[in-house]
Amino acid sequence: MPGNIETIDFQGLPALRLSTSAGASAVVALHGGQVLSWVPARGRERLYLSERAAYDGASPIRGGVPVCFPQFSTLGKLPRHGFARTANWSVTEQRTGDDYALTTLELSDNADTRALWPHPFTLELTVAIEGGRLDLELEVINSGHAPFAFSGALHTYLRVPEVEECRLEGLYGFEYRDALDDNAIRRESGDVLRVESAIDRVYHDVTRPLLLREDGRALGINADGFPDVVVWNLWEDGIAQFADMAPTDFRRMLCVEAAAARQRIELAAGESWVGRQTLVTL
Ligand SMILES: O=P(O)(O)OC[C@H]1O[C@H](O)[C@H](O)[C@@H](O)[C@@H]1O
Image (cartoon, rainbow, N blue to C red):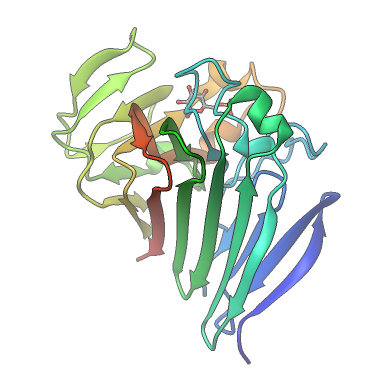
C-alpha cells in the first residue's frame, strides 16, 4: 500500500493528512501552511499542539510548526513573526510513493500582505514524511523587480514527555543572544543544554546537527540554510500569561526553531532562498 494524502477538516480548518504504509503521518493546515502533527513510523506524536489553540482562521495556531515570515519575532515593524502564519496557503503539489508522502503549499503576495509589506514574493513550503523522518523545506522567491530582506523561522514546537528530563546536545561553543537577560550575548559553555527555567535564546550560526535526548529516545534536528537556532520555553510564570496554553504545558513542549533571526537575509530580484529543517527519530 503506497502513502496517502487526504483532505480533512481539522478543528474546522481545511488541512491535509499525509500517511505512509509504515504508519507515519502528518497533518498540515492551509491556515498558516502549518504542520500541526507528526507521528513517525512506529512512534508517537512528536509535535506539541496546544489543547487551547485557537482555530478561528485568523489567529496563529499555538503549536506544530508555524512559519514565521517575513519577520522573526519583533525584529521589525510587522506583527510578531510576520504574516505567513495567519495567511491562507494553497496546495500546489501532492505526491506519494511506496514509503513517503509529500506536499507543497504556496503563499504569494496579495492585497493583505502588500498592505503590510510592499514586496512581491512566493513562499513554498514542502512537507515530506518517510519512516522516522520529517523534512520541511521553505523556499522564498523574490518575484519582484527590487531586492528585499527578511527574517523568519520554522518555529517548531516539539512535544516532550517532561521538559526537565530532556537534554539538548550540539550547541556547545556557539554564541547566543539571551532575550531574557537584556539581549546579552553569551557563549554556550555546556555540552548539554537542560531546560529547567524559562529560556528564550537565539543561537547564532549553528553549524552542527542537534540531538534532543529524552527518556529512552532521541530526535536528530538538522537545519540547512537557516543560520540560527532558537530555543524557547515559557516555564510556569510565563505560560500563565498565555490564554492559548494550559498552565502545565510548559512541561510538555520545547521549541527548537530553525531561524534566520540575527541578520536579515537579502534576496535580489528574481532570486530564491531555501531553508530546511529535518527531524529524525533515532
Ligand atoms: O506568542 P508568539 O507570537 O507565537 O511568539 C512565541 C515566541 O516565539 C519565539 O520563540 C520568540 O523567541 C519568543 O520571544 C516568542 O515569545
